[in-house]
Image (tube, rainbow, N blue to C red):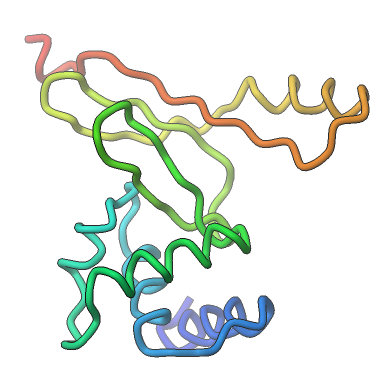
Length: 141
């Protein structure tokens, strides 16, 4: 997909959720799209090129994106929450190396079957979070 098409898609995401199109919102979406691993608020802030976007703006923007299910919050059991786009990616989980902290996507999900069972029981708006932790091959050697 070309850059202009991708930018148009980002604008459509904001408009679909009745969010004003602002430079910080668009830039944060672009940053999240360009990175394949989840990012912390400070990592997102450090990648913002336009001056004048403070850390509080990044927090507020991410919170609004969470509210509208544009981003997903990921917890690697350290002191930071991380965020990644939902709308343009398939559902996946992560494996994190306990030594070097490398993150890799895990493209299968056992939770989907559990969610289907819970829906049959009448539960609504079900979500789940599942992350794996281990020692990568490089660190094990």
